[in-house]
Length: 226
Ligand code: TIU
Image (spheres, rainbow, N blue to C red):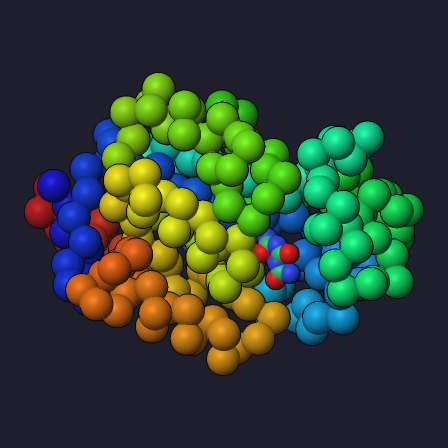
């Protein structure tokens, strides 16, 4: 067992049964002209975590963790996009409409690709998800079961939307989860901070949280010992 200094108390994991889940680090949310931008958000906050997510992925790969990437992505015929989601907020351009990076939030379009700095390597798992949570209407649960995964180390965007929903879905399915505080971001800094607080409150009612430095510290100590 490896022990990470986390809140509300130490998080313990074994590399064989642990996956990193990197949520929706796609151009749609991080670059100008994508879904996030067209909803009227300040996208610069999301780009700021890219180096931290890249460092977390490198850490996980070095430890031999299973790596999973998700994308919020709809089928080209939008049969997996509820009208309520498409119409919500009455945006200028809707999911499936053509935008500067192709059709908004549609599988295979340029905007739907994970940004190169944190892109999947060959052999890593990629899940296209139509909802906010990564378990809803996907094969993520079956994939994790097939790999013997019981713990998730989670990062990505946005903290209070897809990241939080996925953590809550995972929690109800019995996974023990750690959210990496500085490898997640929201368009709204107050929501980011409050989400961390609420998820780890009541003795870690949903998950643990820790900064990337706490994870890097673990491997530094393992290397010193060997
Ligand atoms: N709008 C917003 O904050 N997020 C999303 O729509 N999707 C994700 O969080 N990935």
